[in-house]
Image (tube, rainbow, N blue to C red; front, side, top):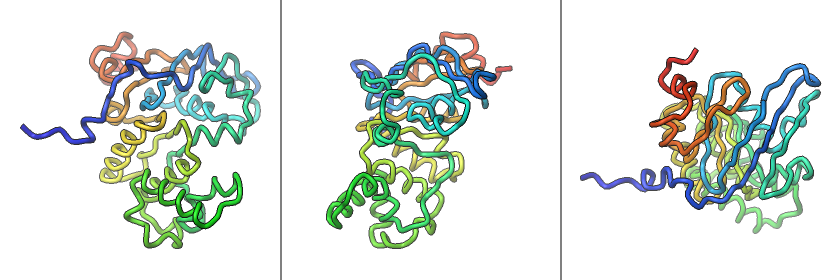
Length: 268
């Protein structure tokens, strides 16, 4: 019998006993000063130190909700919200947005390293939070790049531009940049959609490992990816949360007809 890999052993640890990191209650969101409702009455607990995947067809509200969790939608004019979102029991809309984004980091769909060195990319956030000695910067850089499974590949080229890395390496650099601030939560918006299969596999394994220490929330159109990396999966349709459950349960025994139809490809 082939021994189960460490990656396989770490997947789907279950939700039993997991504390709640983010709690959404009756949360709704409108764009264009109320003209278009993007999210309706979302109630969802996102467990701490687990990976939660948001799935659903395009335009169903997945990315809108993800961007709301660290108030990125505050940059969009005409956004209106009702209901509550709490991080560790505290209203995120009462927090300083910059302080919130330190605690809730984000990685975007396409790699977006800054036009600066690898070292400067990683230490950008901590440097903005306060002066860093060279020793402190080096420590943060090595820690974050190691967490992002990139240290061994770039440790001898830290002063070279991050733009010179491959696409997969650039995305891991962006993850390291987010991790440098030691966030409690890491949001990931289709982080592998622009990557090749090898880079995608590396990033999926990385997500599983990061979920042991951070709360991970990932938006994905790839249902197989959700099945591989997520402890909990939430299915959205037309701005509503249709169903959320432990991933194995949702994929094997969905409770809602719309979920079953979407997972089986019979969704209209």
